[in-house]
Length: 104
Image (cartoon, rainbow, N blue to C red; front, side, top):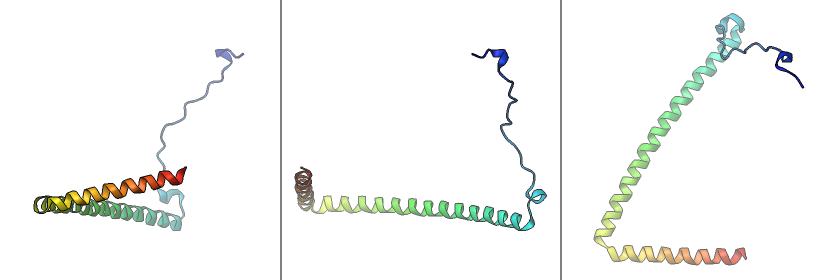
């Protein structure tokens, strides 16, 4: 069993290091490649931000269109809407029973 006096002192490790500028320790070709990778990373990030904004706008537009169409169907032909819901529920019930039967 070791006592506290027998434990060696370990110097604390630095939590963060600041690296010197790339041109001080990298060859010019490696520095140019690193610069290209950095610029490419920024461009890819900007592309994904743009794609995210477009998809958000498209999904918002789709939801608005679906709401508008469903309100119109509900107001113009409620019996057809109820028949569609009943048919979908029936088909889902049959599919569930078949799935359960096949799992036995």
